[in-house]
Length: 173
Ligand SMILES: CC(C)(COP(=O)(O)OP(=O)(O)OC[C@H]1O[C@@H](n2cnc3c(N)ncnc32)[C@H](O)[C@@H]1OP(=O)(O)O)[C@@H](O)C(=O)NCCC(=O)NCCS
Image 1 (cartoon, helix red, strand yellow):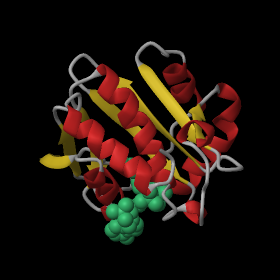
Image 2 (cartoon, rainbow, N blue to C red; image 1 turned 45 degrees about the horizontal axis):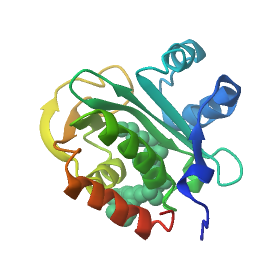
Image 3 (cartoon, protein in one colour; image 1 turned 30 degrees about the vertical axis):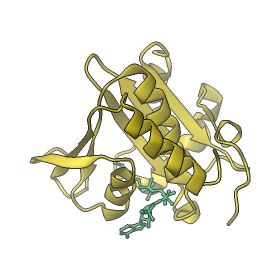
Image 4 (cartoon, helix red, strand yellow; image 1 turned 60 degrees about the vertical axis):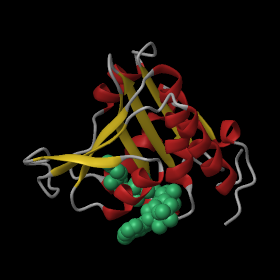
């Protein structure tokens, strides 16, 4: 599918108004989805959080990042099951990575050890496995272990070059 939109047209900040659609997608994707209260608390912190939605038409995905002292920590990247494999996840991640490299020197996240699609997406953005957190997803209905993935030096020119290359590949430069 061709998505001839700029990143800014397709990926826009999440607001409370989006939460019913965001939570409907989460309900299809996660055994224990975030509650509305969790989202509202995150959206109430615009100084150190960024949440975005993808809307090539209707809302089909969302993602978030927490800007912490030493790193930008990805909190979620989620695409509606029927819209995957079209580069929506990459576009969401690109928006977060662009924001992260303006504020932090590292980008990090935890991902289920059983989630090859997400790990492939994060590798594309230069994140590499740096450890395992045993039992991270215990009692969440997922494989219990998380792979910690990380990219350092994201303020260096070669990381900006990587993001530009991805934007060109996605036709949203
Ligand atoms: C991870 C996720 C956000 C990706 O969204 P998407 O819109 O399909 O992502 P894209 O189309 O941009 O790219 C997906 C990548 O995964 C790859 N992929 C898809 N299915 C795969 C699989 N079963 N095994 C390995 N790689 C896979 C694609 O080839 C692509 O990699 P590439 O860019 O190197 O070709 C989506 O699968 C999702 O929402 N999963 C459920 C929620 C989740 O687990 N989120 C991650 C939490 S850490």
